[in-house]
Image (cartoon, rainbow, N blue to C red; front, side, top):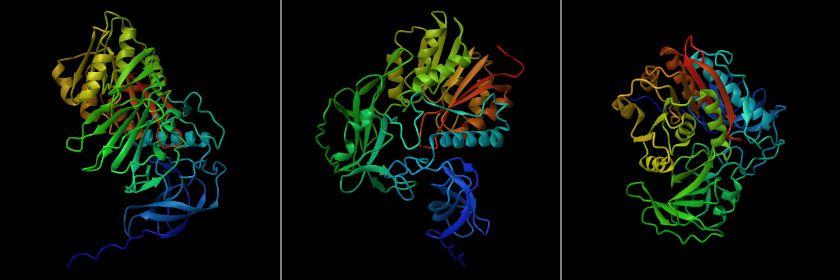
Length: 442
């Protein structure tokens, strides 16, 4: 006989003590029966009523929201955003925490991931245990930095723009996103009728006055006439192949970092926080200390941010190879770095392209992999190249920790690690780890 379906616990409420923060924007608690709860909208040390949002009897864990706060943490504040809270917008994780507390929570997550996945204490990782706020983001509790220069709005069946609810396709209608950069807010996406669209991406470049809107129509829908209060490029996502095509205006925006201008094509990757690109370039270059004439690899290079910074510092006798999988990003990188004859950009996946290059050694390596990390095979290959220093830029502490463990297997140790709060109000954090061969200093 088939097994009886397990009883859903969605909607059940438990009074619980909130334990430590966990990776992903929630805290850990346990029911009286010992079942693990991942609780959003709570803070460590609180006593709350948690309502289950996902899970069933016998599941390894349940997901829940803190719907009533019985004993509040001293770090709790009233969420400044009217669209934050249980069952509401899923874009922010820590609106209810003081800014300093948010950074401590992120530091706790980094430390836990380093120890669990890489076997490293903060001291062994050369990390002081802090998450550094971006310049200008040291705001009092209750104020929200306007930092997000790229916002993807979902559109509901009635044509209203909003943001997705947590782990849901449902759209939370909003009239303003508090973390959106001023250039995004000025486009007024939330105030327009987007009937027939599935999503609207708004981009406000910080290195120029360039603005872009990318429309994704529902099947068979016609594009709306986009008339905004300022010049803006309009692109559309092709429902057949997913490609992004120009409707009018430039097919790119111009960004500025490290005294260079970078062309970033529609849908191309660029750091979302206005200070992020310069902050990360500075951290990477301070860690690598490039020398004239050296050779370097820039892996997952995007439009060439780190390759350009390296080329500047390595001089005319130095050489940089960048590898990037995105076709449009490679076109942009080649355009952006055309003034550096000793820079070469190859298209393809790092794990496929790098072995084909025939490169057996490099002085410096920068890698900025996607959220999943580089992986054991790629890390082993990089460790075999004998670089005197490697800079690993990571947007996910779990992937970073796993790959640091693989680098240790390959004979590399972490010299320093720095963490930056480039995603305020969310659980995300950016890290830069500098590695060197075991037993060597330079």
